[in-house]
Length: 451
Image: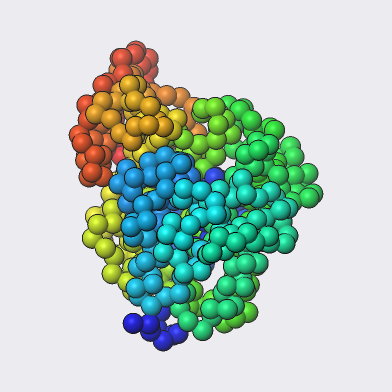
């Protein structure tokens, strides 16, 4: 049964694609790319340690829509459609009396235009399954609910933002849940480039480069100025959206979540941009404002993308389904004592069949040498691939796996990873330790083992 306008908060998800956490000012970027996001983080709740559970588009999106790990949604790689019977956030919000809308990139269907039964239960639809192929930066083509092509005027970021503002204006008298999914700052596949609005690339040419990219190179010098231009335009769009809410008197009663599906390592960790265990692939910017989140401050706990669906339902007063595999962060925001997980769990596909955990101190990752990341969702046998000390080496430039000094750390993390895999519904695998190597002067203190 629908409730009155004042009883439930509106919910908006502002979702970017392939955005690194350190593009934001609150994470130390000095280029003033994200003043609107930074203000959200300072006035609301900043999820400082925010990570994807799958660093590639389709699988991450399936997890955000359903609250399940990608191996349980069935979308363990790109190119697999989310099952029509899968229950998404749209279904839960609709059942609670909300209007529901989706605008932008979907990447969970069998093709374009997305057939209605593959639109995830959203009532209003203006999107494309593969927006990177249906559109260009100044030629935005999406499809309506019936599959009719719609060309939106303006630069692509602005075109989708205009459509979102029109939706908000038309639905301001009834609670709504709106998901806005941008392509940016993802690359334009056809030309393998990051084409920003006219004049934006020039602003950032020769500017600050994150230390991992400065050390490892990749395609950074070719692409990062355009990438920064995309991030800047996205933040301007966020500002316009927040202005629209303010002008309509909806600011105080609207939850806005800003997050991304994964990061971008600019061909430094493998032959493309993501699909690795590194911070550059898995760490994303996340902030939330609105009822329940104002003044939440900076959360220090490790939060996964899988935790965001239950968080949104919880914040809207909708019961969180027991089968969802994440946890609402609202108790953390309220400062309640919570037995929160001490690591986040990451599944990796396409580039490999990989698994990883990230604690506050350590990154531990394994790969399945006999499996194919495109055809195999999981394995019963893995080998150790990476171990990083994130306190001493935050940009993951020195792989410690196999060092004699770190054998006990690896053994402890191996147990924790297997436990998380089992909790996610996977069979307990065997993990083959890396060959032991001499460690020189390196030592690990006992209290550092479980950090």
